[in-house]
Length: 284
Ligand SMILES: [Cu+2]
Image 1 (cartoon, protein in one colour):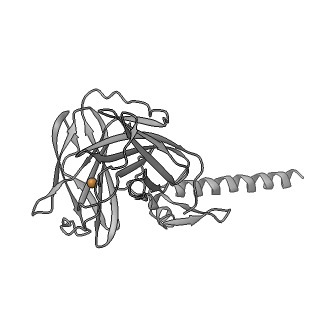
Image 2 (cartoon, protein in one colour; image 1 turned 180 degrees about the vertical axis):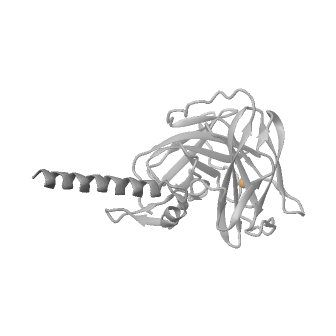
């Protein structure tokens, strides 16, 4: 009886060692195999519902599909007129020079402080050497996420990289969801809609504006970012002329998001930000 117990104990001990060895492998120095297993754009959970994997959510990677976002500088002193220079490199380290026009531009550069306090949407100029450059307002210290949003070879991509502005960083909390936001000069924007469908109504001094001007080929431009990792969501303009400014937004998971709407009226582009709480996510 004692011998039996001992051998049972020995077997249990052996199992523990085997489990420890497996765990060691899983977090060991060669995670490539693990990564490859999750590289598919979609996987299926136990319920059979498709769900987006990290690789399917744009903006989280500095390199994807053989292309890499290379920032010339990553650290800046605070200043309102900092020159950001960057390239998109191919797998031979050569700058890509041939871009497709998307939303009326070949390159969109979105610069966001990681606590969502700062947002800029820039349209960099490309030099003959393939290097893009834009002037960014980096007056406030902190960590910023830089998104290069572009298309090349008929493939749309959003690559992201971090840059740092030195000084005393005073990170802010994400504001609570509010149904309306001020856009300056008497303009107010309200947000409604449910699930993947978001609608913005613009008012000036209380009167609804039905004649927003086209901006980047649509009624407005929407950037939607996930709290926590600043995943950059797919959004599609969906509105009717004269109606609310409407978008389809592909929320990848429940959680909180920061939405930056830009619209144009009386020749001026205005930006408003909203916090959106999402509890239900449609499979797509
Ligand atoms: Cu743009």
